[in-house]
Length: 284
Length: 157
Image (tube, rainbow over the protein chains, first blue to last red):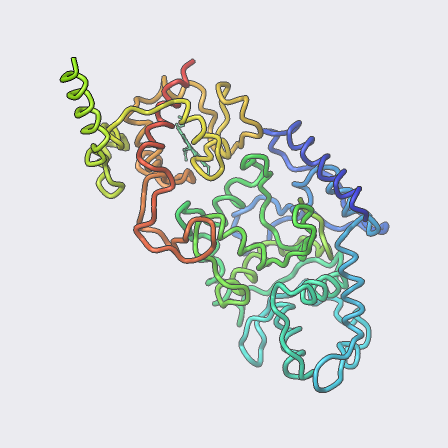
């Protein structure tokens, strides 16, 4: 996608934001990419206990232009990063001279992973999201340095691996070994942090559909991550987004990869059980 | 004449020095959510109050509230109720209490407390994401609270 289309999309966002300010309903559109429907509305899982009446992807809360960009992989700027991810998948790195491909063959071997992570690793008891799997491979099997959590190489690889599960329904385990992590994440979700005393739930459970200034509050679902944010012109991971939200409550944020954010990511992902992995989504 | 001017100047110097008359955030007395006394010891300026209402780094009231009288401020939010007639529904003391700490009026409300400095979970240093140390500076100064209250007093139907 060219700079011009990005600018046009931004202009359209501003215009539509103005026209529909106060109009609280998300869209009721159908997300079709490459002829396949991606589920963006679903019934909530039982563990949500009625906290939401319907699960709605953030895609439905964005304006017509932004939704359209995600419907076409040639327009979706996030796909550029997927291509970079493929290059890096095939490139040897570290003292063992291995690439991802050396052990995993093609990236399609990762199909399904995005839908069930974060999860608790049975052997180590650690919470593993895709970033932790990637860095575990790099440090223990490739003899390479861990990637920083916001490193472009990391979000590129995240995009490539997520895309392999596009359309699959999120199905993050909340019981067994995950139960205490789920409980910790839930506690964090409902805690009112910072000088503005805002919890995730204040905005995304109680007020989704409402506007904060011109921002249409979504349910804060993570099925679309990593997202390409038009205003940042880059990819953001779920935990990268959490940092921004907590900071905006005038609080001390947690660190990416901390126990707290790992638990929160697992919990928030599980709130979207039933929505589809979008691969690389586009948001404003 | 000269003497009168000098006396006048002394009086205004005294008033300006009346920062002593300012009520500290920890000392605000709420009566059923309302605060009788001016927090700054001075009257509010409604024009300044409008800036507090509209500015993201200050009150940012427009992020959540719309009203007919504020319709020249673009993109009002819908999280809070529209404020038309707020001054008909609430006294000045009640509005001051609402702005200082709305949780004293509406238990558990999402509306932030603008004149409060401690009792937070993971208090931050403004919007940096870094840790802050309590007591934090309040989001609005005493005078900014008075200004936005004076502005709200013009919300009549």
